[in-house]
Image (cartoon, rainbow, N blue to C red):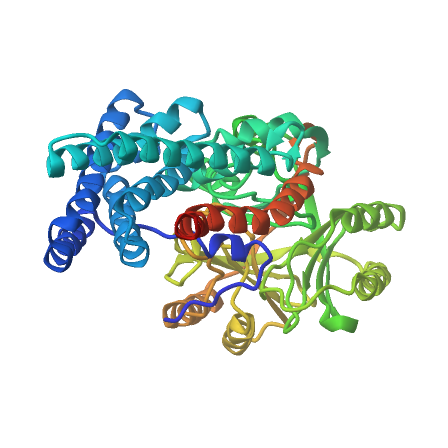
Length: 559
């Protein structure tokens, strides 16, 4: 199945990342390229091949002396060596100066080691040692003596490359957030991507502030629906990215099926660090186990459409209103939190009780929002919900079917169909899919299947926009949920099973409030830093590794 690539601003930064194949394949290619080099260049290939072997030996020694290096994996050592060998072969054929070419190969090793392990003065020694040693040994092997001129040339070139790299580091260091330089932040991000280290959270935590959160829980027998009042990001194992998984792990052990809702808000609503996860989950656990629960009664449901393709499906209970917001065709992604805050206050004043606004995240964003049109639609929802509450509430009837299936972007195969109804009231069927948004058009296929199978008055599909699998792959930021044949088939089968189930009676509601540390404005600052420095860093590093050696060769010829 061909993967849909999200059209996100952050996606282009992930497009340059790549994963290496197994070390055995890399070693085979390395040997093959070496054989071709020997056949084509003869003894002239010796300094280049010696440089490659010394990179492997020095990196092996380096990873013994510094176990925290990302080069503890053999495939990364061989991958870097292979890259350098190809680089030196190309530049030797182009420039015909083996000392310059071998010395210039240190630019690749410097950039990679300092970029992945962090900029330290002593790492320059590790990075340039293979090229300098190979130049010295090659001169001694070929002529039995180390040329003073050659030695001075090699030393001067390598010193130039070290100084140039450090000047680039200083230049890029003027882009910073609260004293943290862009190159250092880049290193921390890459270490998380490669090693799942969480050092980058220290930076985020220092910049973040304590804010209030208002989680709500909806209980339907052994189905637990949790509105966390958080965003599940920023990526991988950081912040609150793994919160849905942690909640599922805990409460499934207590016999619950768990659904996590994604409200309004973006990365400003991320936990500042994953170390706050335990405390957050503990507080939710306390509410689920100990807090008093309020029985809900059902007034009915309504669905409205507005300008800019906005849609809203509202379930109106006596003490709670839940609104699922979608934007088919044009797409949806992280509606501003201040909009929720304003309408939550309005709902309370108008007698609707608590309000939960759910960003359905069911169609990858294709066009920018018109929030004015959404504002109009939500105002209309509030007015219609007030009208709906004039009819007497009835007992909540529900049934659900959680199941596992397979689709690109679907986390751990988690899916759940929930039906909410009441005597003489609208039947609503909801499909929950755990993942980060959906491929365009997938929502409509699933709604069509559920509508035909269940005969419900209203149907909606929503995801939880979970980022636990964001920033863990090469070449793309994340994979939205796709409408795989398995997902379509299993959804229809689960829906047929659902309609054969008897309704259960009663839904309960509980909530809590507490303060925790959120990313807040830090998310905007980090995104701006990336946007401002990315292109400059790309140009400088490419010029450093690929253009500078050519300029030095041209200067030598002209001189």
